[in-house]
Image (cartoon, rainbow, N blue to C red; front, side, top):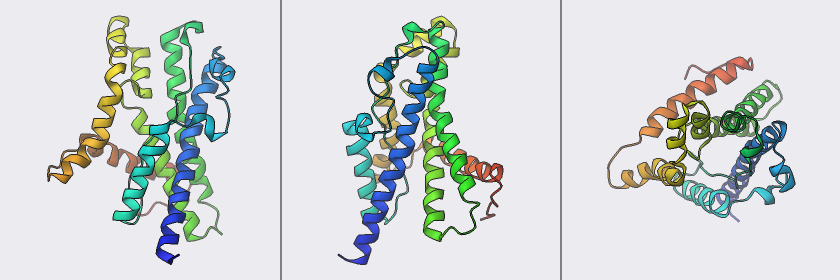
Length: 234
């Protein structure tokens, strides 16, 4: 086994582990928020668990992230972008006193978990004895959580931002917006995969990236500042 292959394998395993932590805790936040508001569906379904097997979605957790990881490691030698999802935690809003508004609270719990994880990881960077590989891994974990948190706030169902929008919009508009959920995943995949496909044809069109990339950079700097970690001027 060559050193280069071993390094790629180690980065692959590390990336998978970090992504699993961020995605699973995101889903657990939804489940525990729903439980706190009176819905026990996720608990009865056995989804309030750290066992990654109960959260696996065949395409969103395995096939798509695996393809992205391997293709980037084999082409550019490092992971520049990750996207995926776990099996959504089941929530029954019919038991909520205010279903739309409380569902919005359940939805926002996921991104808040990712932002909390990013901040906790930034605090870990204050440990003076950290080796460079650990600093790099923690930095990647911060970025991953910020990407997941901010991306999920895009106000398109079935993303969390779409469900938050349904909770705060006037009823008539909220119903129309919720009706977009059946098409939302197609729109999301187009947003994510479309720019890469267009790029192969020499067409540079990435509206999501133009918004998300500077937002993640801004958030990364501010998370480090809040954690008391010096921010590079580079």
